[in-house]
Image 1 (cartoon, rainbow, N blue to C red):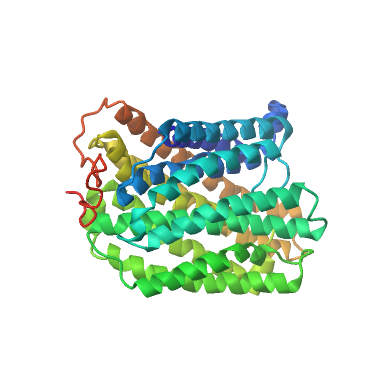
Image 2: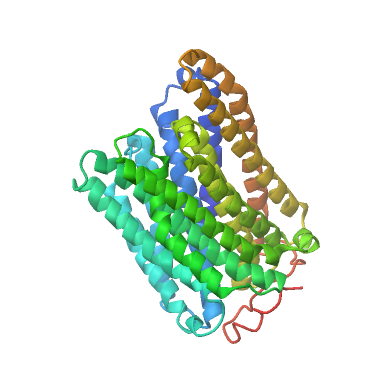
Length: 463
């Protein structure tokens, strides 16, 4: 609960700061009206990315996994106070990182905008929480679905390995010159494609069969896709490097890895798509399934978009444009965000012996969140494509490029406000439901609240 409550709070704060940073792009005079350094765009932009990644998505995933894993393994966690202390330590690391970025600005490193002490706090917290998760997997290796456990195992190994290596090489002076940029791309790939994506796949492959009552198809195909994901994910970031101080073979390896990873995503799609076929009415009835379904489709869209951007002609055109924001929004908000929220809707009642109220805010949360992200992603993508074409034309002045980006930034602002309103709607339900202020009239949980029979409800969706 410490992780989940913190996740919701950081999302609300990050959404508000994101709106403020976009307003500063639309109205540059705000910098003169409010000459406060720590709310300038140069600090708010990396801060919002930090809050959404380390404050919202990561603790949200860890929180729902701490509910899920002991219920599929049948092994309850021990040493609860230690796990709680680790969860509090994670929130402390986010708070310290937020303060550092606001006061001193970002470090300038991709996906590592905080100082070394914050890295140490994250690693200590994760080692405790991750150890608890691996212990809970004990019996589940012998029974139950194998794919979610394999993705979880890969993710639990990737995060400390990637973060620790990035900290040593980037701040320890072992990666000088162009190696700094290469290591930053590799760490970003680890964070996105070997940590967050596998965690999202854990929830999709575990919860969709339960909610739909359908089993996953070919295990051999799933194992092949798992191997490709964990092998190729660390190379994807190199495909985004174009005309920079990076060897051409590394760029080519990134392009090939991205395209091959797209094939692995297509393979996972053949496993997940049958689970959602004919589930329209069930999606309308179950808000958890609705979010997970959108998250699954966003998974395919995200990696199809990455494969498109990896094509040589497209890659050179879209480098240093707003296409990067479109890709980040598609992954963070549409893919990871929908999967995490869907899992929270499905799993939170299992740990709190509660049900979600039948309230219009459930529908508002879904539509405001996804409509807002549709505005943001499409606007950033179109703006980036037009921006790239104009930047590659020496006859187009920079003032013209700036002027035609303004309408797209305006629609981005509308989308961000809608997304923020969706999070406010969710928090209006989330906190009163934790306090049991609403009557529980929606289905209670897909798992029993105790550990006596953890697999009894795995074969069917809740009524």
